[in-house]
Image (cartoon, rainbow, N blue to C red; front, side, top):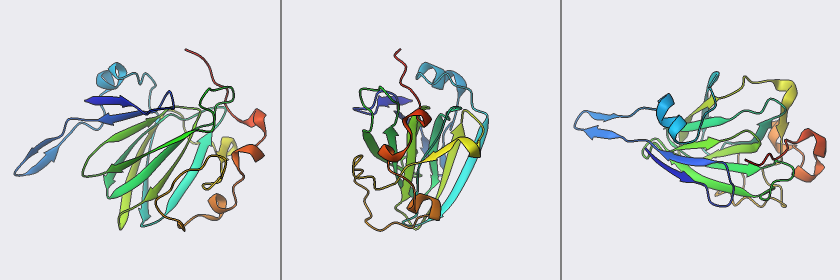
Length: 187
């Protein structure tokens, strides 16, 4: 498995599992505890989620605090533009974002540690999007940040995405009470 840091964010990782192709199709391990430990992902996973979305649906930007969710995300069908935003108070990369294209064809995965907001935009006709989470979903702890927050400046590849009411009316990062955001911890 090839592991790469996401430049400029200090935490998220791009993972490229080995894919074995032959005339029947392909095979890969979506998760192998020891390999992911060696890649620096020591968290245990407690919940798996599957999102099925049509083209131009944008889900995000979401995070959970104080029981932050680390997320290992994989596209099982289709293609998405996936984004992580550092929202850890005191982080040297606070408010910075990085985006990567993930697809069923490439089978690349993105590790988003706790303390980062997450969102994705479906680029294909539809996408099956898998999340392995390190904490169960706790609705009372969920935070939503406006997808087009000008202070963050994400360069989404679609100008008018399909949004839920919650995502369309979310506050900007600056409008969230600072005490609701996670704190950066060195080391």
